[in-house]
Length: 183
Image (cartoon, rainbow, N blue to C red; front, side, top):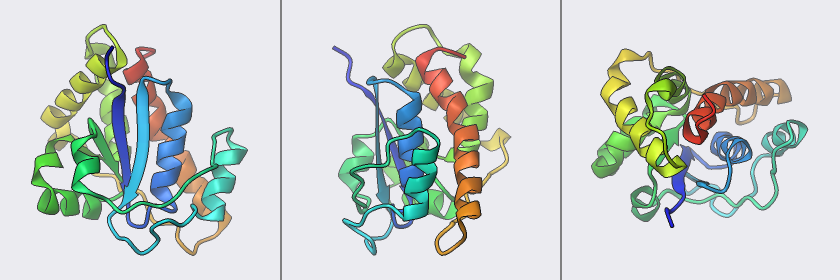
């Protein structure tokens, strides 16, 4: 049996952006995609996601229960087929601290644009096969797309969390379609 395609979602504290990213993609994909998250800092390790993040998820029909912030580890990166990060700073942190993961690490908003454009070129097959092919194509085309950061809503209004959730849905729907073969 083919293992699930593993997607690691990363932001700074793993309490605002990456939990929303993780749970949105999880809600858009089936059991063949394993979504998990971590933060580049350990400041909030073990904490629940921010209430506005949870509210945005629930209002959009995604599961917000059971989150506990985790600190990024080499083991998580090694076990992941794709790493989606919030900002260029996170991208650079992984490239510097974990160079072995740099080729499979992308800005979430930029990766969504690449997935939308590349979906028709992916091979037929299971999610794992399509996902590996998508990551390879994205790595080849990385420089062709403008870097699009996902702003940090920490301490901001609910409207800012809604804006971030809108951006995540716009980015992750084409990723889910490409992985699932619905493009």
